[in-house]
Each structure stands twice: as C-alpha cells, then as structure tokens.
Length: 128
Image 1 (tube, helix red, strand yellow):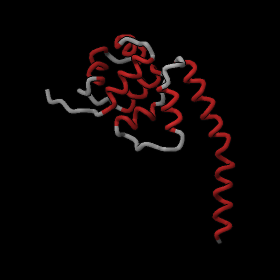
Image 2 (cartoon, one colour):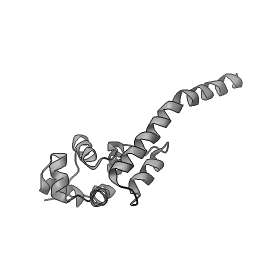
Image 3 (tube, rainbow, N blue to C red):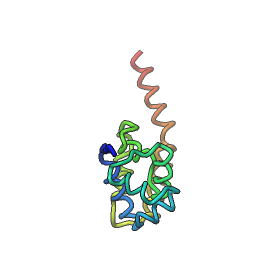
Image 4 (cartoon, rainbow, N blue to C red):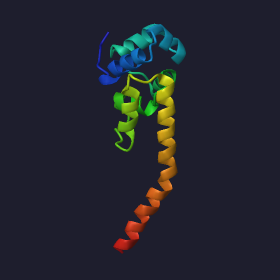
C-alpha cells in the first residue's frame, strides 16, 4: 500500500484527542468512523474527506475550519484564528470552557462586523 503524509493533520488530531481525554476508539465512535480508519488518519496514512473531518471536528468540539487548514484544504485566515487556536491549545481549561470562550469570542466578532465594515466604507469615501 502506497503511503503519503497528510502533514500535520494526523499529529494535530492525536493532540486534540488526547487533550479531550478521548481514546481512539471513543473518538472514532463519536465521529462515526471506524477505529482503524481514524488510526490511519492520525498516522498520516489516509487523507479524510471534508465531510469526515467535519464529523471528527464535531466530536472533538473544535472548528472544522481549523482541521481544513491543517489538512491544506483551506488557507489559514489570520482574523481571529490565532485566538481560537490559543484557546483550543490551553490545557488549563476543559473542553466545555473552550467551546464557551470560542462562542463568546465569535459572537463579539459578529457583533462588531457592521461597525468594521462601516469604518472601512468611510475611509473609501474620504479618499475620493
């Protein structure tokens, strides 16, 4: 069987699974994939589809976008991704607390989007 490296995705998944204190079997069951398949993803032997990554992200309670970036499907966004990554990497808080912090952060960003867009539009008008 030919092997190819998925890059940092497998290592990242293993790290997130361990942080969530889940066994490989528990995560596989929660994500609806087979134990051997998840193991192959973690070892970099398989590249999961976007749908499978979304299921894994949901089971880990992390952003699917983060997994897409790690897998090279999406380019990394700099607007807010560092904050989310820092929250997810923090070992001093549990998974529920991480999700709450991320939800609050994202709600503030959405709340402030209209103001940021208006400020941007005002700069364009001043330049005319």
